[in-house]
Each structure stands twice: as C-alpha cells, then as structure tokens.
Length: 314
Ligand code: NCD
Image 1 (cartoon, helix red, strand yellow):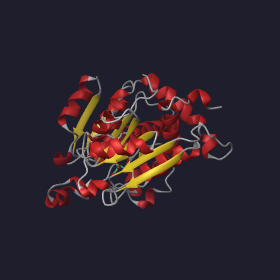
Image 2 (cartoon, protein in one colour):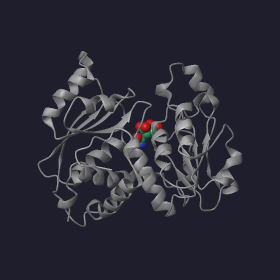
Image 3 (cartoon, protein in one colour):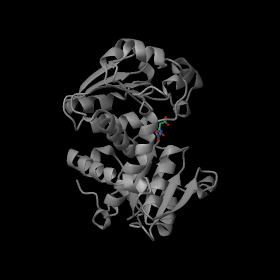
Image 4 (cartoon, protein in one colour):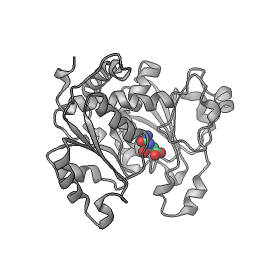
C-alpha cells in the first residue's frame, strides 16, 4: 500500500506489507519516546487536532506523537468551543482548519465523517474515530500490542466482548485481523449489541472463522486474547435498552485464574467501566495500559509514513 500523502479513513486501506512497514518503523520510535534521542523531523509542521467527541488516550497520543517528532499541535476540542456550535458544517470547518495546519486528525460522532473531511481538503486526514464507524489507528495499535505480547497473530483465538454494535475499535480490529492466517474470532455480546451482520458477512467472505454467542464464561478457557469493550452508553437512543445490556459481562481476577489459559492476554481500548475489574491490573497478562502506551509509537510511525518523512528519520 501507498502511505505518502494518503488520508487514513478505514482499516480496509491496509495490507499485510503496509502493516509490517508501519510496525518496523514503530519499533524504531521507541528510542525517541524514551528520550534517548531527540527528533525534529516534523519541525515547522502543524497538526490540526480536531476532536469533536470525548477522548483522552487517542487525542493525547496523537498530539504527543506529533510533538515527539518535533511538530506543533493546534487543537480544537468539543463542539462548544468550535464554530460548529454556531451551526457551521463539518465541510466548512475542514475547509477553514486546513489553512491553519499541514495535516488533520479528526474525531467526530457521525459515522462517515472522516471520509467527508478527507473529501473537503487536499491535506492528509486521519480518522481518530467516526462515531460507531471505524477507529483504524486503534486497530493498528491493538494489533501491534498482540504482536508485542504474543509474538504472532496467525492462529490465535481472540474473543471480542461487550458492545460490538457501537464499538468502532472492534469493527476496525476484526477487519485488520483478517489479514492473518487461521484467526478465530469469537464475538461475545448480548443479541441487541452484536457485531453488525454486514461486517460479520464480510469477515466470513474473507475466510475468517467467526463464532457469535452471548455466552461468556464457556469461552474463557478457549481463547488466547480477551478483548473487553465498554457498553457505549452515548450511542443508545433509548436508555432502557442500555440498562438491559449494561453489566452483562464482568471480567475479574478470580474468573481469569479459574478459567483462562495461564498465558492469556487481556486487552481493552479503554476507558473501562465495570466490565474489567481493577484486581486484574497487576495480572501479568493484562496488557491494556501497555496497549494505550503503544498508541504513541504506532501514531509516530504513521505520521512519518503519510507525511513522507520516513527517509529523513535517522
Ligand atoms: C475507544 C473509542 O473512543 O472508540 N477508546 C479509545 O479510542 N481508546 C473505546 C471507547 O470509547 O469505549
């Protein structure tokens, strides 16, 4: 795949060679992240960091990634302090914002918003989450984490648990995993928040083994990776429907120690609510904080590739 000057809107843009190139570069970012060396490859460049939906990790790690490479960040956070509060369209906001920066990262509550943003500007746009649609860079850092924790992805059994309907991270990660061999995807969710059928069909057409079930405990002993997700309260039109599914699955240390493989990897894109007990934080296989940290490395590498600066990085 080509990276230079490409907007990153969907994980579908990636192939295995692209992922390998990105991850090889991400590893080289570690010495910058650790401040062993300083880097000014993006000196003079400005990132437009446009977050119209809540974020801690994604926004901070995109911004940190850009600043670690020597760039500056110009951000707008939330609708209240942007002209969208006055009724400005997304299209106009992008047309204006592009004049103040060299590359744009956008998070917005509407599915398809990143693609709309990319169509309004010649500047590179990176999707940091378009409502319940996709979250491609999260999928990349999730996959990077699986490699870090388990050394290989081919042949793994991974359970995705929770709100698979509204959770954009699992939409992107499920598709990304399809680039690997013999991955068994176990989709564990209440029937009202299962993975969209269209996506399940795509996964199956690409040769993936998919199991869909509402049953949680019986799968714990069979999986290599448990990917927990939050029930996405903000995406329910009806609060009673949220109440019916909230709290369905809670993973805690007792369950893990009683049922899971000893080398199980526990992941979560965070933020977590009650679905992931804090007594797991000291469990060796709990990778979720390492996962969040990996976001900076992967996003640094992605900036270098899409800004065509890889060769300048020494
Ligand atoms: C996720 C998101 O925003 O989609 N968080 C993240 O980016 N790390 C998951 C969530 O909000 O539940």
